[in-house]
Image 1 (cartoon, rainbow, N blue to C red):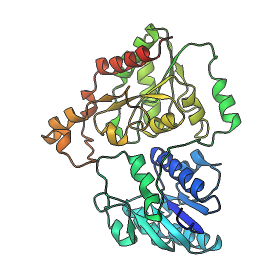
Image 2 (image 1 turned 90 degrees about the vertical axis):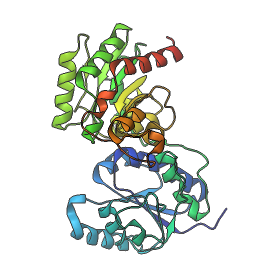
Image 3 (image 1 turned 135 degrees about the vertical axis):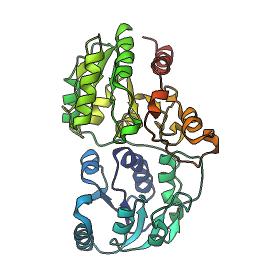
Image 4 (image 1 turned 180 degrees about the horizontal axis):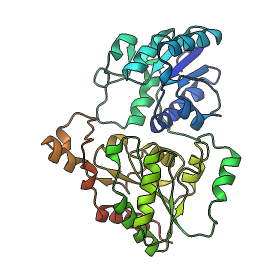
Length: 350
């Protein structure tokens, strides 16, 4: 085992799915060095999701606070003990790169040159290995390698309070009826599927004796999408959109047998909680950013999108290329999603 640093600062502000990917890295660091002081600079909403993660001191940064917020962050970190032995700079956006300059650290680990952008290399002095073709979670997990460790195990154990599970348990009876949960919206709107197609798959599930549950946040887009799905459905649906908190969301997703969603934060939270995911992919590559543990029930139209919008097969694209074009998700058909649903049913007979 390499010598333990006294303190490590993690910088990953967003988004919900990506901070979920960081949790196994925290587990790896903690397992190797139980006494190391871990500080995580994180966004406000992401902190609400992970609040209570043992062994981590969170420091929130408000993206709207600009340079004043960065200076305040530096003062706060100094008050907590000053310079960190190691900074793991796990976000390449320009704002995060600049923010990292306000975090004093001797060793500054960043992404390999292939993944770096927006001047990322100016703010780091060590890089993770360049391994094309790996999942986002594995790339984040490799941030421990310049410190002499390897992430051998992926473990989440997200911090879910008892009262959150009690709330989720109260939403529908534990009567043995399988649950298809639909979380229809991503923060990237071009990844979102069509409401009438969600409705068609939901009605199919209902016809097979499944309970259908809608979940989502409080944005107008999510409310409008949910209303459109409900209006297009013939079967009844339990509408929980806007009714849960970020602490309750993992407990809610955990109760689902299958979660249908585009590439989104709830996809990765559901996977972390052990639920199977019917992922809808055309704008992004499920091999890179799909549900980490099991992609058997995903719809993959990424190659078709590459050929239509970029004129080449997916195998010829730079790893990580997103195809967020208008209409790209129309490549995912109702039949595609129903086939994925039926694959799940075949593997999990009642």
